[in-house]
Length: 252
Ligand SMILES: NC(=O)c1ccc[n+]([C@@H]2O[C@H](COP(=O)([O-])OP(=O)(O)OC[C@H]3O[C@@H](n4cnc5c(N)ncnc54)[C@H](O)[C@@H]3O)[C@@H](O)[C@H]2O)c1
Image (cartoon, rainbow, N blue to C red):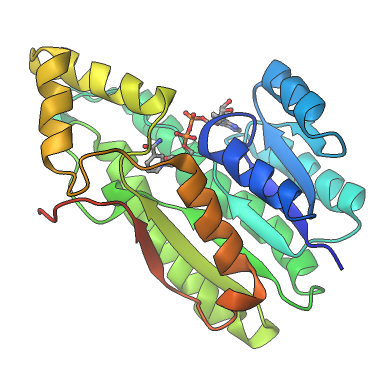
């Protein structure tokens, strides 16, 4: 039986790699995103994928999206909570409170809402599995990205709690903590860092590379490979864990 999978924010970036990997493995996949045209492109690339326009930071939209995705798939085995936004690059005292609220709303509350609505369906699965997308910012401090870092630390606590609550139903939950993943978003982050610090972009990039032991950023396909492993039979004994996919030279 093929897995029935829901991926949030799967039109682009890491989410799209996860969708592609599940499709290649023969899974039935539903994807939500705020980017309607991105979803359209995804549908043309991966025919058969169910797409739903939904902002995971809007509770009423999530309350419509999850049942619609489950109905289209005919059940649910895997939930990948991938949606997450970075918010502005600013010190805490200058951080706009409305941006703080929005980052927490999408990253943390959105993950809570999608998950709470998915749990009754995952309980019907023979091998339910939940992935929560945290970040290296969920184990290190992250200057000028307080809302992002706080939300990603909170998601680790959420994933660990889910694992304990849901283990009795055979459902596993794990948090993924990617490091610097190559792609458009990473370049946005470094541009923001350069602007906030007054450094040249080249200096920011060199600094970022200095903390990479392998001297390259993470391939998004490697995140997708970890998701597939964790949610497969091979990952059946792994729950409540923080899986770091990075090559960061550890620093506080
Ligand atoms: N890129 C990295 O280096 C990195 C590192 C660690 C963790 N992460 C985490 O991985 C996840 C995906 O990151 P990415 O770099 O692929 O993101 P991204 O910025 O490339 O965006 C991916 C998708 O998210 C969608 N999206 C944005 N806000 C949404 C919302 N409110 N509701 C639904 N969809 C929404 C976008 O339309 C886009 O299609 C995030 O949770 C991010 O925090 C990324």
